[in-house]
Structures are given as C-alpha cells and as structure tokens.
Length: 111
Length: 116
Image: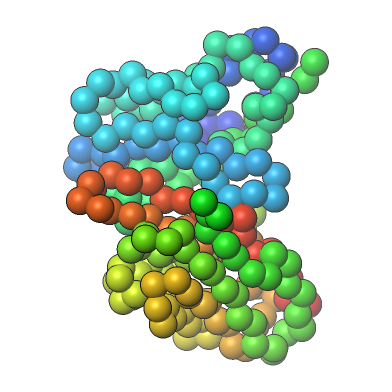
C-alpha cells in the first residue's frame, strides 16, 4: 500500500523567503512522486514529478523537489517566494492511474 | 486547447434529488478520472475509465453513485438520491498515454456540489 503525509497544513512565508513544503511517503515499490498546485476555484496543476533518474527534479514556476529514498521524502522548495505562489500544494504518490494524494498544505505569502 | 471541461461549475440541490455532473476530456485522451475533494477526506479517486471502459470503481462510495462514459468525449457522474454528505468539489481529469507511461493527468476546474 502507498500513502503520503504532508507535514503542516498551513505554511506562511514572507515574499522573497525560502519556501519549504514537506512530504513523506510510504511505498512498497519504487515510487512515482508528484507535486500539484491548486489555485482558488481551479483544478490541480502538475508542478513536477519524479519517476526515475535524477533525484533532483525541477518544475514550473521555479519549484524543485528532491527524492530522498533513505528518508522517504520528497520535499518541495523554492528559493524565493512570490505573492503569486499563494495556493494549496498537494504531494502525491503512485502510478499515474492510481494517485494517492496528501492532505495538502496551504501556502500563504505575505509582503 | 480547451482543457478538461466540467459542467455545471456550481450545483445546489436538495436532499433526495438526482444530480448529474458532466465532463468533457481533452480530445485524444484515453483515460478519464473522477475525483472528490472534501475537507475531511481530501482528494479521493472515485473511478477511472480507459477507452470508455470503467477500469477501477473501488473508490465509488455507495450504490447511489454511478458513472458512465458513452463515448470518448463525454462522461457523467450521477448521484441518486443525493445526501448532504455528498457535498464536495468533484473533479474530472484526463490523460493520454500515446505509448508513454508517464503522461500527466490534466484536471478540470471542478464542480462544487452543495446538497441541502
């Protein structure tokens, strides 16, 4: 069975500060890992994904995530937050047809 | 590209009524997914189709829920009778494989359902 735990349902950062959203997973097989973003009243949009290969994955809007097998983690980072990054972020694990989503982390960015 | 289209965007109904949610996937996509998002349970996969055939409906909560995909460009999720606990945002997503195993799911904007 696979599962995802996102640490922190709410994260607040200042504009220009580092963004760090935490995700830990559980999987009995080599995982596929994803980060999605959801803006208010919109569907989910893929930020980045890890399937195989390089463990540091770069995505859209300056986000990146690193797959750490030893820590079963896939934390999302961005060096400098923008006001437009305010949204809800979801970590997910699984094959494409059976994604298991975490509970989500709401990111607030203040001036 | 129009993206995944869902209708209606908002639906308010009374308990006991039938509700039908509609989805038009992206043209050429061969997988279609229905999700439900609630505060309590987060985002859950309800059912998915491949080439219009239901593959896995293990997430469908009860017999009151049914989903169909009569053709490649249209799917419905029906709740009959509806109950207040069905209130949620329902998302449709589609995906193309085209020989690659890791093509992403594209989500529609969702239908916000409120059952009074």
